[in-house]
Image 1 (cartoon, one colour):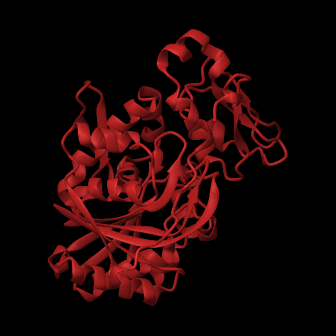
Image 2 (cartoon, one colour):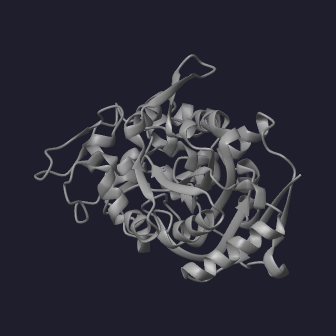
Length: 371
C-alpha cells in the first residue's frame, strides 16, 4: 500500500512550501529517504525556457524549498533536466525558469543533462532507449513534476516527468517511433522502469498548473495543492482521482497493465481536502474516444491537425527544429511554418515547444462536431 499525502497551498512562499514538505516527510515517515552524504538529483519539469508565471515548468520556489531540506539533512542536491527547449540552449532554459537563481542562492549546481552522456537500454521491441548517465552518478532522485494536462498523453504528472532523463533530441525521435498515446505511454513506462530504483520521492507542484491544451499552450490554472509520494505510479493514479478524471490516462493504463500500480490511499494534511479540482482536458482528446472503426472509415474527415496562428507566430523556427519527421517547412525569421499533413504524425511536438502558443489545433469539418 502506498500513501499519497496532499496539502492545500495557495502561493509560492518558499518557507511555507518547505514547512509543508517537512510535515509530509514526517507524516509518512520518509525521513530515511534522504541520508547524509548522499548526492540527490532534483528532477523538475523544465519543458522549455519559459518564465515561472506561465505555469509550464516546475516553479523555482518548489525546487528551492526541497533543495534546502536536502541540504539540511546533510545531502547534496543537484538540479538537472533535458528540456525540449534545449533546441536553443540548456543554459537559457535554466536561466529563464529560475533554476540558476536557486542554485546560486543555495550554492548548489545545475547540470545540463546532455553533458553526462547516456546509458543504453534495449526496449521490448528491440529499439534502443537512452537514459542520461547522471542517474547512475547520484544516490537517489527526487522527482519534481508540474501538474498539467497534455495533448498527447492527457496528463503529465510524475511518471511523464521522467521522460526528461532521455537526453537531447532523442526525445523527438521517439515521438516518430511511438506516435500514438498508447505506444508513447509504453515508452514512458519503460523509462520509469529503467530509473525506478533510484526514485526516492515524488513532490508535485500543483499550486498553479495548467489545463486545457497543455503542456505549454493550455490555460494557467490556480489549483492550490502540493503532493508527496514515494511511488511514482501511485501518485499519478491518485492525482487522476483528485482531479475527477473520468477514465485513466494512457500512462496509468499501461502502468496497471504491467502490474506497476500499487494500491494506494489518499491523505490530506490536517484532514482538509482541496475542493472542485476538475481540470479541463485537451480539446483534441474527444477524438481519442471515437471508435477506431469510425476513424478508419472516415479518415481525414475526423482528424485533428496542428496549424499556426500567424498573429502569434514569431517565426523562430522551434517548431520546425522539433519535428521528428520533417513535416514543417519555413524560413526562420521570415516565414510562418507550413505543415505537410501527409508526413505529420500528430505527435504535437510543435505544439508543445512553441514559445508563443502559436501552434493550434485544426479540426476537420466532422471532427468539429465531436465534443
